[in-house]
Amino acid sequence: MLIDGHNDLAWALRERYGADLDAVDLRSVVPDLHTDLERLAAGGVSAQFWSVYVSPDHFTGPAAVTATLEQIDLVRRLVARYPDRLVLATTADEVAAAGDRIASLLGMEGGHCIDGSLAVLRMMRALGVRYLTLTHNKNVSWADSATDVPVLHGLSEFGEDVVREMNRLGMLVDLSHVSAEVMRHALRVTAAPAIFSHSSARAVCDHPRNVPDDVLAALAGNGGVCMVTFLPAFVSPAVTRWHAHAKAEARRRGIQKTDPAYAELMAQLTEQSPPPVATVDHVVAHIEHVREVAGIDHVGIGGDYMAAEDMPVGLEDVSGYPRLFAALADRGWSGADLAKLAGGNILRVLRAAEAVACG
Image (cartoon, rainbow, N blue to C red; front, side):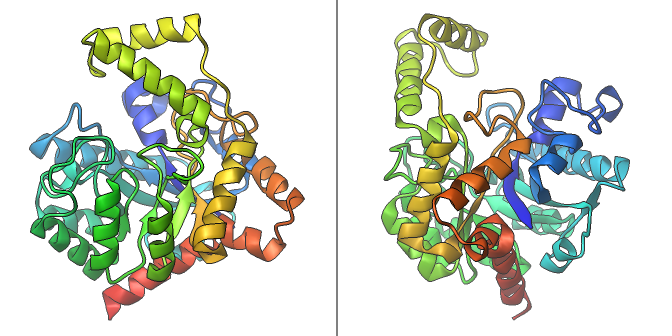
């Protein structure tokens, strides 16, 4: 059973097709997306956490709540449109019972989605959301992001309340995107295993979105799982350096990421000096490092497929998972260990969170 921790198909459908499911047929290959039903089947995906992400650059306050509800609606409509291929899942038992259909779980990406309200958090859980990533690329009032200027150096008191309420609700505390200080703070607070839905190892690639070794060790003690992501900027040091240079050039020119000129500048820089290429081997290095530091029971897969952005060679879209597992098998991974990586570990964490909620 292959359970992937993070896929941004819903955001891509919103951005590229206006969330109009009549405008795209996911039963066949969709060239401008990384994900469709044909390639999910080829990739052997059994269960998918669909991100109901909305951009904090464009949605804040009540608007972020509304947009998140729209994304939840989009995923539910997607499942209803392809009932022979997809089934909504809100519990570990429902994932296990999905049979030949892809169990479809919901994950919210960014604390801005709840607009500082525990009541909203509870209602999102009632709609089937199984994890909340505490921040996205920007701080929220109660937690620092990995890619913003630190303010709290951890969680606020309300941030601790959010974590405890998630424990009570059986929602997974997702520490991808948060600062290392928030990672450490949240692991001290949570009573249930935490996850990184799409993060890699900082010791292998020094990017703030990745997880330091001391946090990986603490995650093992917590019983959680780091679901290794495939994004080239997070797995290849050379790609990380290229992006850092590009962002520095944008800052030098006074161009913000939200400006239309930003995309134009990135295109120019790419033409002048194409970014390095990441490969399956880069991802393998991160998976093996997480296994080495945290242990085989604490590593998983979180591809973070979006639209048509470049992904590692061999993992260009969701059909590529078998190549990754073949590469690991060639390096001596046993069938039992591959089964834990593929889905056994995150299924255990889902059950543990449910047990804490019931306890």
